[in-house]
Length: 450
Ligand code: ADP
Image (cartoon, rainbow, N blue to C red; front, side, top):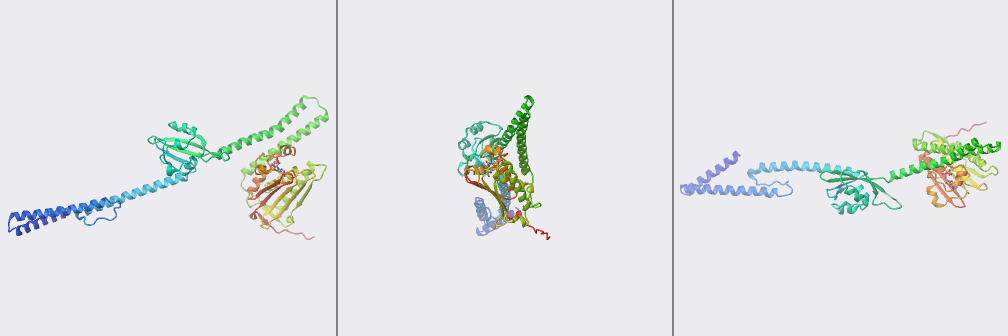
């Protein structure tokens, strides 16, 4: 400031002196000199201000203007303020982007509506569930895009509301998808819409209800028979022979309930216990022997007057000390379920072929083939569902619970094994469990020399 005043004063003095000399020592000459200096100073000042204004009008304020004279400190200050503002803006943008990315990552749909229920923003999940394309649907009325009448009515309600359930936009009759939608008011009449895919939850609930209904049904039948016989024995005079007959029938029903409860417990254990690791190794020979015994004794029990043709072939694996990693009880349960099914669903004059083969890939395959009635193609994908039966009466009559293959599938999954089923109506069926290489090992077998 002082420098500016001093420079101006000096220039005025020079101008006055110069005018005085040029004007032959007259006062008018001094005045003219003063006038010229003042005019030049003003023009130069205006030029500097114009430079600054031109610079301020630019978007980028990086290239500072030269020739700003005494205004350099103003330019410096503007640059500092702009830089600080830019830093703040960048931080805000980064924070907003991080926030939006977090909402994008949410498995639930998030949609923002303005006070007129027009779409302001939504994440990808909401876009997918509600069929919104943010490129062209921004600021569109949501009611024009989500046309479910229930949703339209819900939209008219103001204030916080309970959630409603509607069909997702990509729901198809063969693959229904349901979403729950809830609106939350905020700000100046704005609303936040949250959506959640509840298809799986609903399916699980249906499965749970079906399961309870199935179990109740399975238990009720033998229970009704049992209580009927108990009633008869208590109220009617019956002969010793009749009493014995009733008790035998009661015993059959009690066994049926017992088998059902055992299978249910097996399933619940399979679902609730940790996956069998590699700490337990079961010799194949043990499983193989137990499995053979089960098949033969069940066959004898079901067909006491004939001998079913059951062949076993393990390719000598019994003797090579092969072991499977996993739970012995579970593996036994899976193998015997397959063998018992073959016995139960194959007529007495049919044949059953049980084999255990070490494949060239190193996998171990346990296979049960039969020449029974076979299963129609449409039933095969559903066989491992709980209580799914193709031949209901044959299953019941032979002591089936409808849970056998569900158990087999669970056990296979828990041992990284694959269950494959193939069948032809009238020809027979084939069930195979294939264990992966990492669950198989060979151990040295001690041979006792006599
Ligand atoms: P179940 O206790 O009724 O045998 P599973 O879960 O073991 O229950 O089997 C489901 C259904 O699959 C059975 O009810 C039966 O209809 C069919 N099934 C299973 N194994 C065979 C087979 N070897 N031959 C023909 N049908 C079979």
